Image (cartoon, rainbow over all chains, first blue to last red; front, top):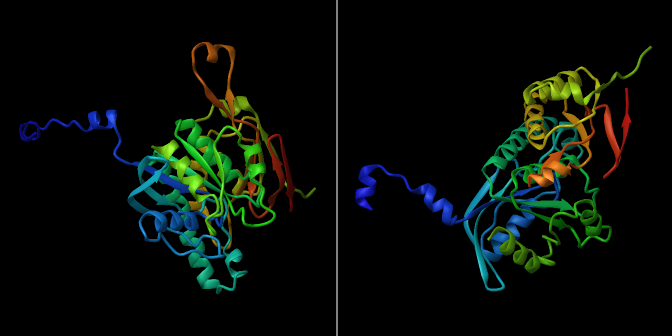
Length: 210
Length: 118
C-alpha cells in the first residue's frame, strides 16, 4: 500500500465501485413537517444523542445539521448512515408570518433572512446525497410544490426515496391521501413525536438505503 | 383597464430556452407582478434552481417569494423509449406568480385551483 501511495495511484473509485461505506441520507420536507423531530428520534434511538431544537414556529432549523456514522439495525440487517437534517424547503418567506408567533419585527426579519439562506443550503445538499427521507405532514395536502420538487429531483437522479407520513397521532391525518398522491414510492405512516410505527420506518430505512 | 397580467408561455418557446434563461425570465416577470402559465413546466433541477434564486431575491418589504404549482411529473413512456429501455420524466403545466398575489386553494394530480388577488 505504501508503494501505491508513493506512486500516487488513487483507488478510491474502486472502493466506490464495490461498496459504499455509508449512505448519506437527507431528511427533507416543508417547514413544520417534523424533520428535526424525526432526526432527534432516530439519533436518540441509535446514538442516545439529539440533532437540534424543535418549535411550533416555522423555520426553526435554519442550518443543515449532519450526524455521521449512525448505524440502524432491523431484522438482522444493518445500515450505516450519515444523516443530514435540512432546513424546511419553501418558495416564499414573509417575515410577517413570524410576527404572528409573537416575535418582534427585528427578530422576524432576522429569522426570515436566515430562513432564506437555510433553504438555499437545503437545495445545495440535494447534489450530495445518496437518498432522501421526505417527511410529509399527513394532516396537510400532499401535493405541495416542495413535495413535488423533492420527489421529482430524486426520480430524475434515480436515487432512493422514502416518504415518512408524519403526525399520525393527530386525528385529521391521512397517510392514505399521501399514498394515493405518490403511489410509486414507499410510504411509512409515523408519529415522530410519539414513536408510532418507528420500528417499521427503521425496517424500511435498512431495506432502501442499505 | 386595471388588472393582473397573465402570460401563457408555450412549450415551443420554453424548448428554445436554456434552464437559466427560463428561470431568469420567470423571476423577472413574477417580480413585475405577472402570473405565468407554462405549458410544459420546469424540470426538477430547474425547479430547485428557481427556488434557490428566489431565496436570493427575497427582500423584506418588497418581495416575499413566489407561489409555484405544477402537476407531478409523469414517466415519459413512449413506444421508442420503452424499446430502447429509456425512461425520462415528462414535466407538466405549471402556474407561477408572486406569493403576495397568487394563492393555491386546492391541488391534486390533475387540477390546480388558485386565487389571484390584485
